[in-house]
Length: 298
Image 1 (tube, helix red, strand yellow):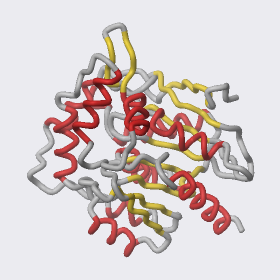
Image 2: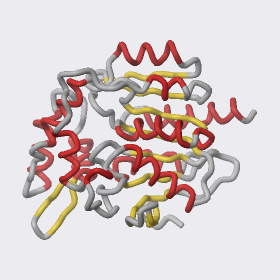
Image 3: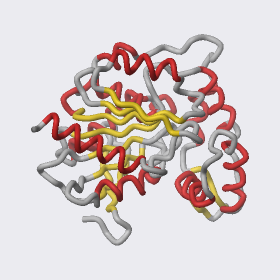
Image 4: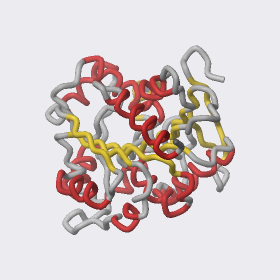
């Protein structure tokens, strides 16, 4: 049961025994799909806190929400083998956690890497996917966007104070997110860093950066169109930041042309990846889930 903070902590063992963590918001509602939230490459369950509170307390349709920390992020253990930091292993970890929770079908919200994992889940266990929200990710990843991510992760800023961390994030991302408020930047820093005796540290295993280091971004990256096409029967909402370097408008348009049940939202004043708690996005996501469920289970 969720405490005063709005969620409870759930720890479980990955298939290889690593101790992993997720946050659980709300109570099981047998009439409604639960929602599974999957964060970006170096991010964690805290990114979804405001959205999860909104969905789990949403009037007549309160949903159980599970927000995962992948291995090496947040409260999940770091993996001594860096090769295990890949979307296939992480997809298996998510399925293991959902099995422990006896969740056999759900709506999924995936930001960036989380959306790639959803594509993999569609190949591994398609029946578990009832509705999908892709946050600034699609079957084609722009090399310039990945290069941008690599540039600000290596080296990752090492601020000594919360204010230094907020200033650093604004310097790095401010041009792509001109509409964010001070409160938005503060929430971002609170989700990205953790306090230690040595000061603030990015809340992820630094070895994750090495998984990007050897990628040749001068060549086109492999696409996931076959995996995306396999999701054609599943209701889909695609969200794109208007200033995104990772998901192009051309890819978004092609996604709409290939997926008959896809809706799209472009978020002005934001880049990669839009803050899902900002503006009307929480209501838009809740409305999409409610409509999708009514259409699937009239």
